Amino acid sequence: MAKNKLAYSVLSISLSLLLVACSSSATVAPKEEKVQKENKSTETHKAHWSYEGDTGPAHWGDLDPANSACVNGKEQSPINIEISQAKADEKLEKLEIHYIPTEFSLVNNGHTVQANPKTTDNSIVVDGKEYKLAQFHFHTPSEHQFNGQNFDMELHLVHKDASGQLAVLGLMIKEGASNLSLEKAWAALPKKETTEDVKLKEPIDLMSILPKNQQSFRYNGSLTTPPCSEGVKWIVLEQPIEMSKEQIDTFRKIFPDNHRPVQSVK
Image (cartoon, helix red, strand yellow):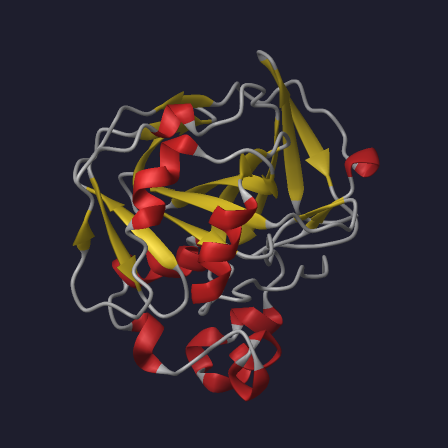
């Protein structure tokens, strides 16, 4: 039986799922890696890593002893979510999301574009514990899979509780209508690695980005970037959000592929 447990929430009922095919890494998320970078400012640059070749995901564990979890971890992310194999757990508490329009600044850290909030007023409550939004970032294609299929992109909203533990809210992104809530931010995406934050002129309303149906899968995983630290709570919403082909292509021109492949459950 796989260790990674998923939770599925339907309306006011939370359902927990057991996956038997993939695993996940946690601590922050691709920019979990970013979260990682924020919590351990020198971690990301200690040893060069990338998404291809000799410094790609298959070699992360060899680049630095600190990355041993990338190879030896037991609950690594991302994972493939086989919906038919998930089991409902009605004991899970309903996910609470508390977001308000907030000012953000953008950073291109060489691995993704990350948005940093100017306040700590955004939060989620998971299993009765509050986690404050630390940052959000994007991956293409998606890191998690549903029934073996990737989406065009994935958004990771990384949160941290008072003790430093992480909870990441993952949203699948598919090609469709233009995402008006992210339109202004997309126009300011830094194309090259930055040394200073790019402040956005208008706030972002994260609630307007979320899908109407917030049924979700939950499991314990890890960061999806080195050092692949475990102990991250993952909440992956089932309903995807949309971005236009032009918006997706704009991100891919900066990062053609910045996803970690799904991990096997050990």
